[in-house]
Image 1 (cartoon, rainbow, N blue to C red):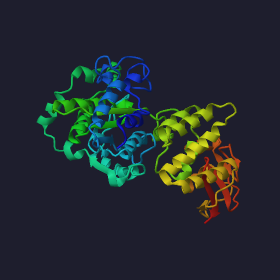
Image 2: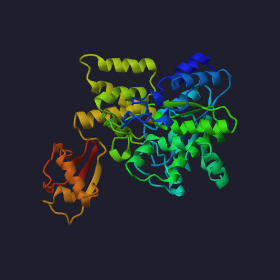
Image 3: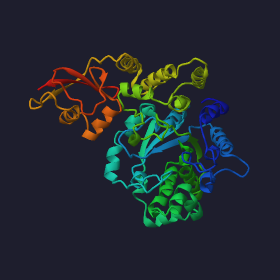
Image 4: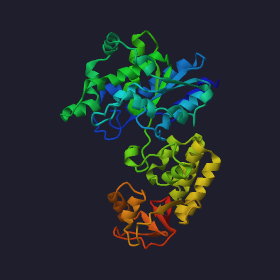
Length: 433
């Protein structure tokens, strides 16, 4: 293994702790500047969380053995996005340094749903639905982790068997004043909104994972601080040394909001190479440094070079985004796919040339020339609704033979083999059935 000091430098790089977030509350987006005592707990008096966790990590590393390190991910959607993979990058660093990493699928915690940072009560999920959504999570994680060196677990293995008496015992560990003072809970109570008892059990459940996995360290986003802290409390309760908390910044979506499928600003790792590249090219210029630091596997030297290039007078941010986009595709699909995606972007977006493999759509013989494109899109199942198609046209996202059509009442002239484009990359060739 590498010397302790060198490992510390690698593993602490890029971390961000709850007491370093503006306002001191550890919640981040939407922070009102108030202090969240629960979020800031965990450091020894007079020490920052960074100082405390650095010292504890060094102590573990000096034992000269592979540390047990884990990341837990709750299946709440089928596909993981690159924001989820920020802590996976850190897990990979541990793995490359010779430590034992555990990828935990939260099949039981997901049935409650993590309340951290949530402005309202989350919809409960059925266990069978969670299992289906998480079916390919390990496979997705193996884009970065070595499958031969990764232990994959599900927390239903131990949470499903807890008795009511055991749950009550674990609940006794948690000071109620810290539970109800959590800012996400406190804000909802002050607004008179719903807060149900089962939501307060989430931290207990995640904390029990740390105990059952006998972990030395846990990685996660800084918004997970309280959940990670719960693991330390439970480990101490059972006479174990508390695990080291390594928390990381949150990666925003391409538009600056929280990365989410519902916002349409997420880059999913299972997206086609062309889609990953195209979405990366839509990253807001001011967010490029954030993506360079959190979403890439570049060395710190390369990352600093890219950010310095971005600051240079006369640099076009698009040039840096091209390097970033190609790198993201290469991480998840390989170099050949990255080269193909870059070429596709040049041809389809920049040069506005149609790709070679355009999807053919056959229009029924009953549809006559003069039919509105809005209606034709529904018949051919190119759009989910007429209102969706109208919005696309009005926003300049519909093209006929590479010419933008902005009139929602525009019609098809009946010509066979008409080339149309929806958005930036969805090409279709209209044919007669």
